Length: 238
Image (tube, rainbow, N blue to C red):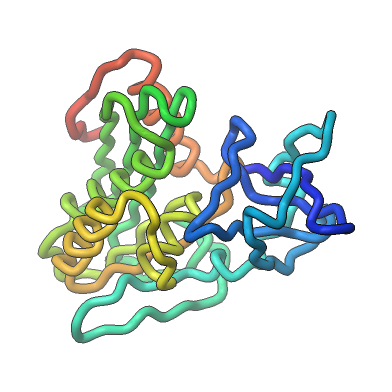
């Protein structure tokens, strides 16, 4: 997601927002960077931020992903705790994983926020590629992103091999694995967490959006297709 220039007291900062410029706040706080190109992320209270007249949204590509929400995190269960690992390049994703692992990418899209929403999911499993494009009706971007992770968990429920699921939603990573308090969507967050617990070994990873990662770009395309067509396509083997 992009960043929006804002004033934090007497300092200009860049606050994470959606494509429409609405701040992506969780429990009244939003991720900020103090300058373009800065990898270190901080949190600021929304009430302490004020808009800058005439400013434009800055692309996510202008900011490195060395922030707290970019470490890959495992979904917690009653017997497992969240953990993180540094990102490493591999042929199937930014993080190294076993050859028998299931690889999944989920993304959400919304025309307006709220507005018509949809999701896209790509799952590489058993040597096959499964794709889902689902229209959700009226919703928000965060609802679409969370529901994409729900569909991943449902697809992989009971699998006895490692599952590595990728999302470019820092919000989803935060509320699902990092203890962020969900002010909205509490019931949905609880549902997703329960579904993740039905997967014996699942690891959730943040991945930078629109960075040329093939399966993430495809998930985004499937989500946008659902919104544009106001229609769903059930799981298909590609």
